[in-house]
Length: 271
Image 1 (cartoon, rainbow, N blue to C red):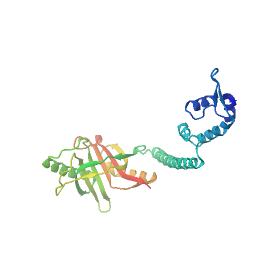
Image 2: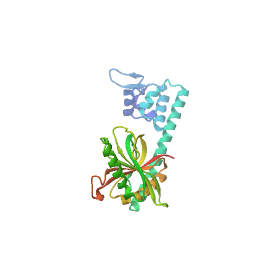
Image 3: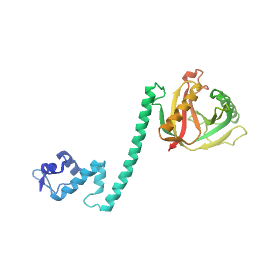
Image 4: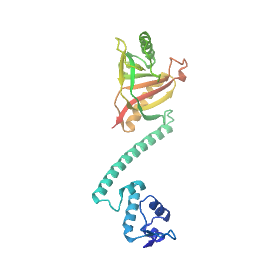
C-alpha cells in the first residue's frame, strides 16, 4: 500500500486533490486508518489515477469523470463518451472562432472611430400578434404617412394594443435604383381581428436577429443598415428575412429626433 503522500508523488495529483477525489467518490482510498485518519492506496489504483489525469487534460470536469465510474466502464462506452466530447469541443472551437472574428472586426471599427463599434448583438425577438399596414415610400423619413394611416384605422376599429407598447416597421425591399422602400408598419395587439382593405392582422413567429439600438433621427438608418449587413457577412451569418425596426421612442411621443430610440433588426441564420 501507498500512503497518500507517496501516491501523490507517483500520480502527480496533489494531496489536496486526492482528498477532494475521495470526498466526491472519484478515487476512494482502499484503506483508512481509523486511529490516525491516514489514507492508503493500492497499486491497482494507479491506472485509474492516470486515467483521471488524462481525462482532466482533455477538458473533462470532475463530475463528468466521476459519472463515468472508471473502474467498471466498458471500453466501447468510453469510446462513445470520447466521441461525444470531441463533438462538444468542436462546437466550442467554432464558437471561439466566431468570437475572435467579432472581436477582430470590433477592433477594426474602434480603430476607424466607427461610432457603432460593439453595438451589435444576437438576440431572439419573441412571437407577436400585429395590426399591419404596408406601402412603398421614397425615404425612411416618409414612414410617418404609414403610421398615421395605421393609427387612424386602429382608432376606427377601437383596437386594443398589447402591453408591450412599441411599434415595428419592416423593410421588405430597399430599391435605391428605382428610388423606393417597401415598408410595413405594425403595432402589437392582444388579439387577432378581421383584416380590412387597408389593415391586416396576423401572428408572427419568433426569430433570431442581429440587433443594433441607437439614439437619433431616422436619416441615419441607411448607413446603419449598410453597417449591419456588412457585419453579418463578416461574422459568418446570412440574412434570412426582411429587416425591421422597433421604435421605443418615436415621433408619436417625442418631437426632438435626437431623443428617438430605435432598434434595427436583421433576421439571420448561420452560414
